[in-house]
Structure formats: C-alpha cells, structure tokens
Amino acid sequence: MDTSDLTPLFDAEGKFIWSTLDYNGHKIYPFPNIKNKLDSYMKSFPILDDDIYLLTYSKSGTHWLFEIMMMLTRGSADYWKEKNGHSMLEFWFDPKAKQNGGQRVMMTHLQLGVMPPDILNNSSGKFIQIHRNPADLAASFYNHFTNITDLAGHLTHDWSSFITEIFCDRDKMNHPTWWDYTSEWWIEFIDKPNYLPVFYEELKENPLKVIGEIAEFLKVGADNKLIEEIADQVSFDRMSKEKKKHENLKFFSKGFSFYRKGVVGDWKTHFTKEQHEQFMKHHNQELRNIPELHQRFIKYLQP
Image (tube, rainbow, N blue to C red; front, top):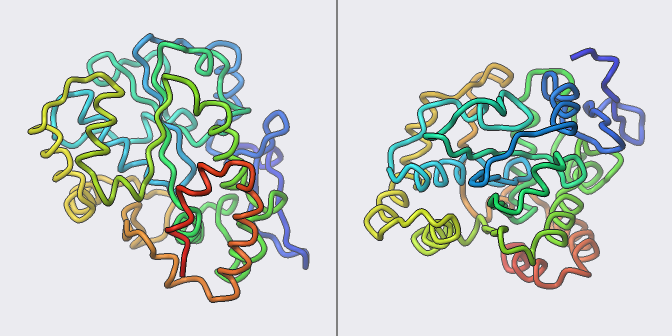
C-alpha cells in the first residue's frame, strides 16, 4: 500500500500512535490493497443465496467461531485446513472462488457503513455476529496490536495510555471504537430474521447450546453427536494446540499467537481500579440507549 494513503494518529502530546486508512469517511485497518478491494466490492459483489457472513470486531473470537461455522456447514468436526485469511473480505478473499463445497463462509471486521451494498441487501444470506465484552476484548486487542511488526499497524503506547486515552477515543483508534461498531450493527440488524448474535461468554459457558443454536439458524441439520464432537474440537486447549501449527504470523513478533488465553475475565489482570471505573463510565454512557445489549455484558464487567 502507498503510505501516502495512510493517516497517522497522534496522542495529546503529539506522539505517534499508529496509522489508519480513511475510506469514504470511515476509518479502516490498512490491510494490503484494501482500497482497491473495497472499490471493487462497492461497484459489484457477486452474492449467492446461501452465503454466510461472520461479522466481528477485532479480537472477539473471530477464528474460533469461523472454525465452528465451517465444521457445521461441512457436517464434520475436522479442522479447516486452509488459512483463514482466504475467507476474510479485507484480506485474500476472492469473490469468484469456490469454498467449502460451493457454500461460502466469509468473515469481516468491516463496519456497517463500509460493507458492500450487495452483501447488505442479500436477504437470503445469513449474518452471524460474535460479541465479546469490551474489557476482555481491550486486553486481547492490546496484546495483538503491540505485537504487529508492520509500522502502520503497530501500537506504540503502553497499556495505561491505551486503555485510558486510546481505546475509547474515536479520534485515536485506528478503526471504529467497539461501541460504535457494535451499536451500528445491533440497531440495524437485530430485528432481521437472517441475523444471529452470538456472545463469546455464552459460547464459552455453554458451547453445546450455542453451537446447536447456530446449527439451527444455518439449517444444517446437525445432530447431537456432531455438535458434541464440534464442541470438543473447538475447546480452547485442543483447538489452539492444533491451529498454532498452521498460523500465518508474517506480520507479528516472534512467539505471538492468535490463540493466547481465550478466558473470560482476563481483563482483571490488566485494569487498575481507576482504569476500570473510567472504562465503565464510558461503557455505560455509550450503551445507555441499548439496554438489552448493555445487560448482556454488565455482569462480565464487574470487578
């Protein structure tokens, strides 16, 4: 990507944080060739009636849920062998390529305003979105972006600066804040019959129930045996051990992995009391008009 396309972001003292890419007034992460991809998608995106779209904010459990969806649509608890980047709209995805026996499962971090219109208007497609409590997400996000080696995407600040000055700030984040992203999709899609919200914490606590709900939504006809096999295969310890063998970590520090801990409540090892209080004040303000979504997370954000 031409670095002239990038917009550097700075903190209050003028120190460089990271870079973002402006696309039609929206901040997006500067994946390689992303502008050309989106330009093409906006003009025309070939859709199929049985397309499945996985919507996620970074570090919400993207690869975990993608693996579950691929197992369900293939009717097999075997791991997906291809690199997940081939299924990400912003990365290597080829709209003309066949995938998964013809049915396509696509994942994306794109916000609502940057999604190709053909996808948004695909009333026959299925939209699944995974939501994760923002405190755990922030801790995972920090680990991820401080380990990116590409200068544009590398987060240069320490945890204290990140959580108090950057993560909640629309001007300093390199793509939309979690609250903006989550609220936009929720308000627009929650009443649509082809949308299913999945919650990271519930999937951890009761995988059989949630995987069964996903199977029913996708109408794949999975029996209890398959659901139990999938739940076993995607347990964090088992899945991380297997998937780490095939990770593409070209742009990350040595020793980094997409599969770090996968636990609920890890934020408590990162936040100070004061940081948590400031964070919760922002969280409560941002979700004040979406009480059903606020209630989903509040119990996971208690000290």
